[in-house]
Image 1 (cartoon, rainbow, N blue to C red):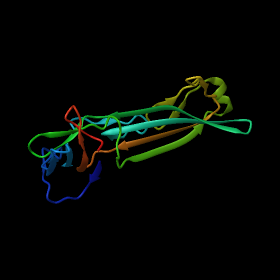
Image 2: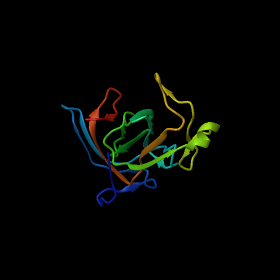
Image 3: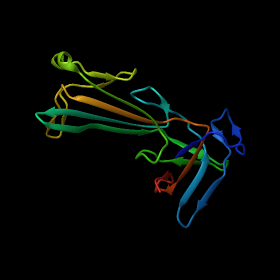
Image 4: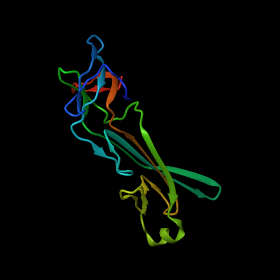
Length: 178
């Protein structure tokens, strides 16, 4: 899904929320291409607090034991708001729950607790919206040391005046990955 900011042939209706579009549907392949934007409600990303249609957050831990460096993915979260495009004949809904090939805005930060905070058990805070990494993390059989360096990466798909979506219709009638 690619945001498109300047197309003069498309007209905005209802304060920019629903746009008149051109759509192409090849029924033999169930391949769909649509242009425009409609979102009844936005999400707020957990780290930066950005209003968005989709976000994913990945947290990784990095630490050393002797000469060995260890990396462990701690969490992976993806969330999508219901959104779609409308060509005047109805809304074509987008299924972005599993991610996709999006042009996203990315935020990345690495930090560690430091020795004193590791002993006191304080969680690490990332961003300005209370996103924390707790102490005592276990992933399967792996215990992540509280002194590890943590990296948080947040990607968001922000609303834009126009989007181009290309994909296949899934069983729910939504446009998904091609």
